[in-house]
Image (cartoon, rainbow, N blue to C red; front, side, top):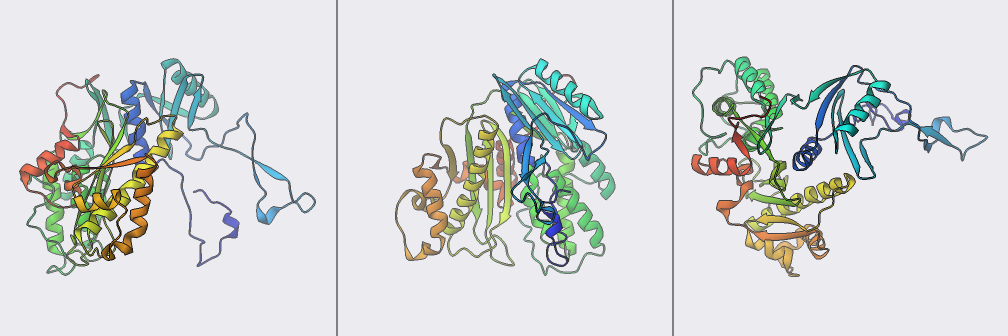
Length: 419
């Protein structure tokens, strides 16, 4: 665990606050999308000791720890080690992603990749597992159109654990008729099993965006699950049984651009009347980030709910743009946000303030500023083509299947390269 000035922590105040610096999932999807678009070689490595210590030729400095300042030289600085994750020099480029002791390494050429692996092996005990094929419980298969990511093995194990291998498959991740609420009848007799299954389902949202809304719904009742809540969990498991061969497709032939679909279900939560925000972010044709969350405040109108969702989505776009910049990947055009609410779009484009929108003025000015700077642009999309719709509510089967395909959740291609 990583601690910054941990010696200053106090019991009962911040003593238990720790931070472990592991790569975020969205960073993995961004890098994999770039690798597929550029047709770079990519390997995975396993480090035998998760707590690595290395010696670097460069010298990095840090301030003296407060409790160990040299009284004779209070202005001196101390040496510090660092880890290199991005390499860019003379047209050569490499990315290294570290998740505890698992490494994903890619480079712009095979020779550079081999050289970096050789240097890493010289410093640390590690195994080169070859071309990327399985990491964090996710299978990776290269095909004619890009990279196919699947968690089918995890689903098989989960169905066996829950005793649902012989159940009839469901056609959607959640029935539109299911209206879940806190006080929803008799309590479920085994809350530990409920929490265990929901935790496993949450892990499946890593590469299964079409179940994100449904899993988010059952997560709200972990503290006191009812029998009806467990029925919703079983519905999700039945859906997974029928889609075990499905996965997330990243595309090889794609333009270097960012565009996002953002949506909101006004007062979607029955218990709190909070609205539910959803967004899905694409790098070219590949989905790299998605979310389905409550807004944690009551919106007075659908326009307000949509605009809060828009502002939240904008922060994710800006973060990914900055990430791409740090990866030496520069976007030539503004990132487009697609919204199906005209009132929210008008608020972002026109300098109009009404009595009913004063309380969201900060969100409005934040988005307006990014549009004025040419970083973002807002466009209208009809509700039928709103890809984020599946992240805010339960849909009927035909519309659900359409939006699932729009999120690039597809059946595994018949021909898998190297398979």
